[in-house]
Length: 130
Image (cartoon, rainbow, N blue to C red; front, side, top):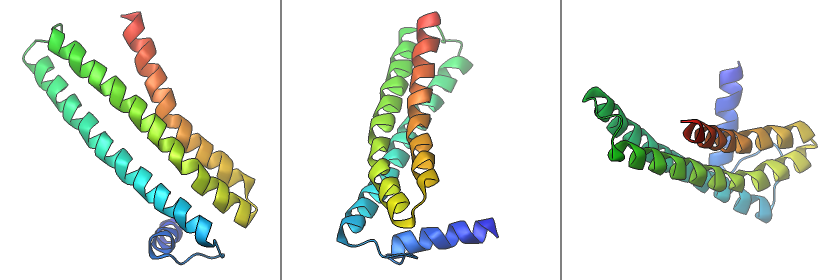
């Protein structure tokens, strides 16, 4: 049932049909949210590629080389970029939360936005402790 509801909500967002009237401004927020998701996915693929290169270096016992540090710096910068880009989801969650009178949805959106920031801060702390 939950899967059906989530799938239906996704179809409503992408097809322009919603359970409530958003208006023209809400359409712009929807397009921004879709663009943010796509940008995050593309940057995530770059991170997966960098992690694959890092695993190949680990496999060949070159873990303590300069190439490994360059890859880790690239992963850290990509994670920060994802965190900054994900802030673009907040207007979407705020608009939907206001229209549906659901402040919990705004908090849910804030949680989604702060996940990449927590990953970035974890990478910074891990790098500085070594």
